[in-house]
Amino acid sequence: MDYSGLAKMAAQKKITAHPASMSGDPFFTVAFSSAYNFYGVPMSTGPAGKLTADQVLDRIFAEIGCPTVGYADYGENYSRGMEYIQKYAPLFGTCGSAIRDVA
Image (tube, rainbow, N blue to C red; front, side, top):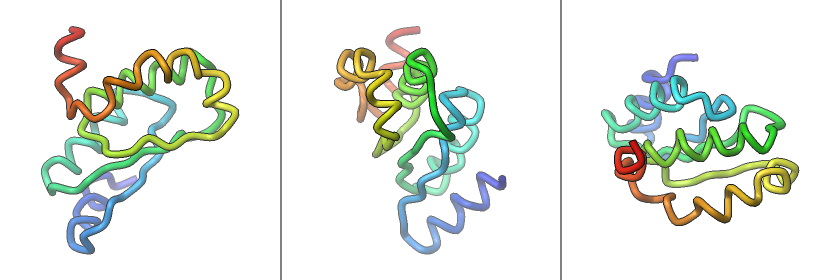
């Protein structure tokens, strides 16, 4: 997948793109968020598939460190990761500052 190409196209069309988060893998999340940040494109993410509770937590941690404007998921993932979603929901929308504060 061409992350920077997708971000460039989204910037040209003035749309919010919605790539899969790759189950919270920080490498993929940061890879495409840096391109979206460069082009000034809002980024909203969704899961790559069914996640375990721990993968939901991984995804939350990866995404609060990036300037995402939306977090979508499947109902099954919400159910499995509800404890983490409720606990860390206040960190969404912090545009990257939360992960640095935690680190």
